[in-house]
Structure formats: structure tokens, C-alpha cells
Image 1: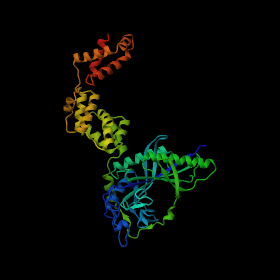
Image 2 (image 1 turned 90 degrees about the vertical axis):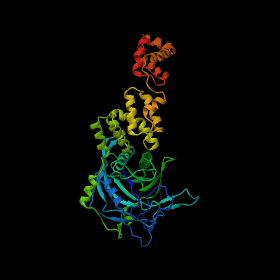
Image 3 (image 1 turned 180 degrees about the vertical axis):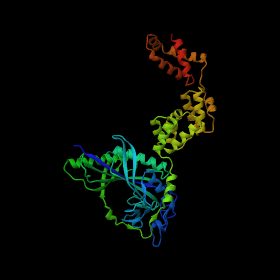
Length: 473
């Protein structure tokens, strides 16, 4: 039986500030438990919150990057619930008057091509603490370092129709927020967290089915896996005549299963009301225009510029702009004098590999430009150039020519040397020589490869083929 999947995502993004939302405590990840706390984030009597101006600026930048309307006036509210990691007994958030509403995120769906997902709202709030269940046997520990860290909650419309689309949307959203400088968006460190709402309905139905919310997902791949599992669970339940209950579920990455934990709260369960300690947040039109003016170039615009201005293929532009740092490096290599397509090939190959392994660029753009020039001039082959790159990654101050000479990788064009390698290869493969002379000319590439192998990459490939053709007559 066919069901239509409807998915909406709520994304909590930690804003890239040094201090918390309403106090001066540090936001450093990995500090000893309960060391970044004070009377404000602990909710002690008499302590008063003061909004972090930097967090407001970053949240506004994120909202503008997502095409939202930022409202001149928004209101902080108290979201009341009781849990061990919430020392005040309420969370300062925003409810009926959020910071921003009405944005859109466009991306390529794996199933439907180019689509857009609406952004219902983006609002500011503070984070709760963290419960640790594996530190002490039989006990749960509470770490309040995270309590009060500034968050932007981004609530998407239920416009997604598959788990794969949800993953693609999250990838695009993360790119936009990183380009805008809003957050590091690291799921491993908890600076990006996703709650996924999913329901099923008959194709063509206008009314949404009963939704469930899935939590506890620590990667985009696990978001997709969790939604696949919950979609399958709901389908089996509905096809057997059962009803879906509105619950919150946790995803177990080890088993690939979801497990209900509690019934899903509604907004009235939290008893929202304006925080009496915080006045409305008022942003002047002039200040909002200043923030719009300093918004950096976003991924989609950058892709378009690289394609049109530098003439690189659309695929290359997508890969290069997947990370802002990678795109910056690519443009620096081009600025250092490397032809754009050549620069793209290097960046999408060896450079991206080392960046993924180290999180940095061990070879500077000028050094890579010098190496690319050696390959272009025929001093070293492209394969030898890759070996030189690995050496430079270990010794970044060494000149590429020096490294190539030390490794004995200068390309050999001398006819006598090439002829010697060719004769050795032909002597070692008499069967292939007979087949070539019998009409199998496609074996030429085999012989070229064998000469390159025997010369350990030193032979000039352009010079090898004429010598081979002569010897094979």
C-alpha cells in the first residue's frame, strides 16, 4: 500500500559566541563539568539575565541568510518544564513573537530535482544542561556547562517527502549557516542538533497524519536512518489497522531502531509567558540594514560566480563550495596563477583528501601553484606531482622543485633513456607485442603504462608513445 511521507525538521544551532546567552560564562566545548556556571545560568535567586548582543547579531545574520523576515520587535518568553538539566525550572526562549519568520531553503532533492523548503520561524533561546548516564554506575550525572548557551532554533515547514530529502536539506542548511559565520554546526560537539517530525498520509490527502518526533541523532546519516526506521514503523502500524500515537522517540544508532520515550507535549503544556526580567528585543531598521550589508557571499551565489567568472563545470563548483574554507583555498590557488580547471582538479583530489584528514591545508596556495607549474612545464609528470604534494604536506617549507629533485622525480624526455625502458618492456611482453603487430592497436595504452611503471613515473608520457610506435613497427 502506498503512503506519502511528510517530514518537518527543527534544527537547534549553537551560535558562535565566546559567552552564554544571558551571562558572561564561557561556551568552550570540553571544559571540566560544571566549571562554566554562575548564578544567572544556575537560576539562583536574585540573578538577572542580560542578552548577549553578539548572539543577537549572529541569529539575525542566520535569519537573513535564510531569506527570513526579521521583525523589529521580538519577545523572550519562559518555557516552563521540569527536568534535572534545567536548573531554573524554565528555559528562556521565544514563542508568539519570534525573531524572524518566513524564509526558504532551495536545494537539489535526490528524487524531485530542485525544490524549496519553507522556514516557519527562527528564534533565539538558551540551551539546557546535559545529562550523563555513563559516568557513574547506576547514577545519572548533570553537567550544567551547556545551560545558557545561545541557540537559534530553525523550524522548517513540513515540505520534505523522504528521509533522503531531509539529509539533503540539512546539508544545504549547514553550508548556509557556516558561510554566514553563524555557527560551526558540529553535530559531534552538539552545536547542531536535529529533531525530526514525521507522519504518513494517503497520496493526495490534504490533511496531515499524526506525527511523531524523533530525537537523539548525531549525524546527518543517522537522521536519514532514523526517519527510514520510523517511516517503516508507521507504515506497518497503519496497514495493520492501528493508529499512530503522537509520541517522542529516541533513535538507537547501534540497532537502527526507534523507541518511544514519552507523549509529545503541545505548546500549552509549557505555559509560555513573556519573561518579566527581559524587555522586548527591539532592532532598528538601520541596524538591520547594516547586518544585511555585511552578509558574506552565500554558497549558491558563490557556485554561480565560480561557474560564470572562472568557467569551471557545475559539478566542480558544487564540490569546491561544499566547505567555505575549501572554496577560499581554491580561489587563492587561482589567484596565485593556476588555471581554474587545473586548480579545481587539485583541490577536488589531493587537497580535499588532506583537508578531510587534518581539517587544514598543509600545502599553501603559493606552494601548490609552484607545483602545478612544474607539472604544466613537463618538469614532473602529474603522477609524480602527486607524490611531491605528499612530501610538501610533511615539509611545507620545501620548494616543490627541490622535493622533486630529492625524490628523483624529474621527468625524463631523453630519447635514449626512453628507448631503453621501451626495449625492456617489449622484451618482457612478447605475447602482447605479437598481438599488437597482429592488429590489436589498443594495446598501446598497456605498453605506455608498463613503461611508466618501469621508469617509476619518470618517463615523459608524451615522448613514450612515439618511441613505442617506432619500436613496434
